[in-house]
Length: 196
Length: 77
Image (cartoon, rainbow over all chains, first blue to last red; front, side):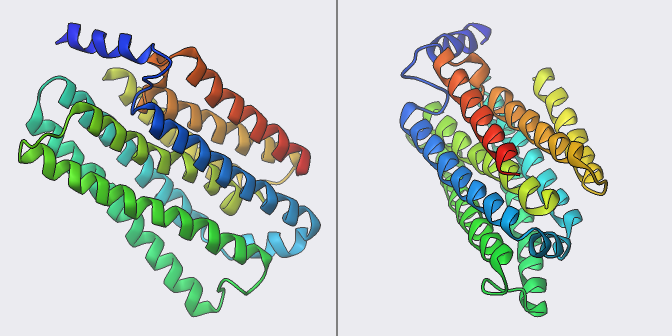
């Protein structure tokens, strides 16, 4: 089995075969650049209206943001563990960790929904001010990615458990997409919840 | 496997540290929060996504994105 893992690592050394596949990595970089540019635009707006952004940032619950970050990080760990077990040909444990990964994503969405409901109730909607326009657009766009990621993981879970033609490459690609959601959140969290 | 468990522990500690830092004031806090975010970004991409075993082009691209983003953000802020 160690030999199999070593073959995988050698495959990754090839420029055209990063873990998850080159097409997904092109998507990952496009997503990171898109979110990155939006966050830079937000930082620029924040520099022009520091008081508005500071007061608005204080209206966000940083504890919820921190807990949601932890949900995604732990979920990412479960995903990496699931891939590792699949490479060890331990399908049962791989499926267990895949379920835990999805549970982490589900908890993230539940907590985000509670936060959204509270913001709407207080009237801090998308048009409230510039800060909340960025907040809603960026976090909703991210939530869409998490939902798509969960659907992909659900399909992969079904594929592995029913022994269909799902390959390790498919699982690695879905894992890379899920980790991309982590990476995007790692950029959003400090700027939205902590910086201003 | 042991490595990613250690990385998970480090990521959790860094997340809590960033939340704690946000309650403090001063320009060094911004630098600290961004540095922590960058470390977490590297932790997930290199260890959870296995970029550490990928071609140096992909490692370099991740680092280049992170450096460019962080420097531009620091200039703006």
